[in-house]
Length: 384
Image (tube, rainbow, N blue to C red; front, side, top):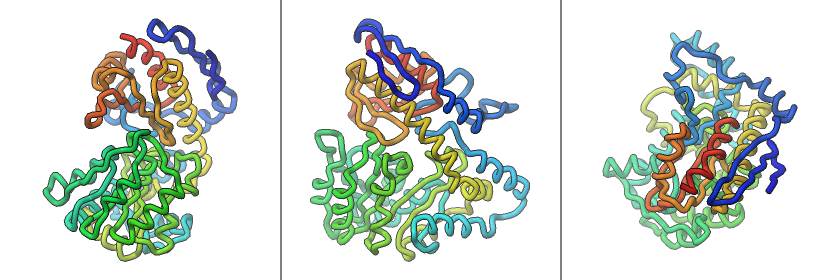
């Protein structure tokens, strides 16, 4: 069976016996793009940050093609200015973000990754009442407040197709609800909600309580402008949208994120910041925020890798959810932790089990050669 995707993947063989994966030559366009955005430079301590040699790190939803050259140039500049506390850089970045989205700078709160903002929001609103959220979402930051005894999560079961059940969530919302939290596209499912259905539900829920929409992966969606809830913020609804430089911008280790909300809410979030954001992070974000060439390159490589994985799971007859992110959630028919361990023995790191979804596995998009390793190993792992 042949698949004409960006690297012309061909998978042959019988499922349950032997399924081999092979790739043809990289197209000249891809080669040119990779030349424009070269691999990491050698380091005196190559394993200090990132995966050690020989490991395909496909477990953390990172973009290994970043940071962009435009960010690296600013990082070098910021390093030379490292003796000084950041001054106007935060205001500059807020102004850039505001200009793109048609809001005012005072509606932007910039934090150490979106994680700091999400933790702060959980602390602020979790004290008012339960955080209504899907049963399966990126809950680390909400659990931060839970673990401090300052919040509780009211989890709503997913729909039969593993999508977020907005109707069921809306039915849970009362005047006692502290916060509604959504992740769109969702993590770990990778699925994006129908934009009109989502916006209508968020608008209704925000009339009763604050609604947080975590859009960490929105730049990777097929149509970010149609899917974002930023328009609801601009209309004056009680909505917070969070974004990050950790995903498509390839800056997970540099830690810059932001929220868009009303000026009053932004000030409240910003007031919880525990320290100053690194000048290096702010400079890198400023340098790469409007770098469309790098963003297009990254998204193209991520989509290419995603199609490879979906082609592989398809030939193996495995159920995969329709991802619009840099990861795929698929049902292997085996214990997720066992699949994770078997892959680890082959030098491929993926995620293990989430909650009681014991047959579902999440794999992230890394560099193409690392995704190839996963695709070649998967038939053996699932048939063992």
